[in-house]
Image 1 (cartoon, rainbow, N blue to C red):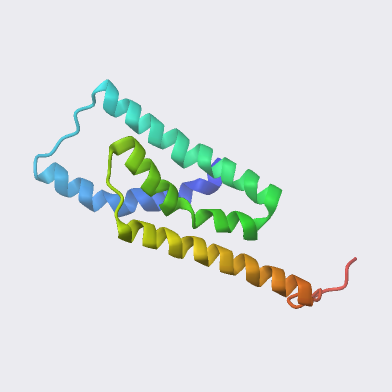
Image 2 (tube, one colour):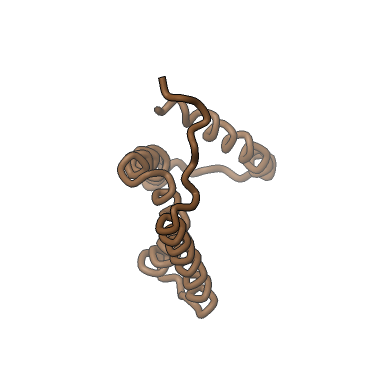
Length: 130
């Protein structure tokens, strides 16, 4: 499973490389203090690897459609975490955005229920089962 993450992480490294090179040319350097190394370790392990496995486990448990809906909640969690951990102030436009996200999730769930109740959307097999 970790091998499947290499292309996306590699793309991230390639996308950031020009910015890193610019900083090096401009004389910027990273002070590798224990706090910075701890932050690197945290970002490398929890958001990158652990969350990948948790999301895959959730997908196996509730299915890809429902697990996909959880991805749309990330901005809401991010806003509340930044307010709680960093002291960022939430404004009316933040709450408006959160309301639109929740409305979108609610509409997709209602649409799926109506589709299931009507029997629409049932796919016919492309092949005969063996």
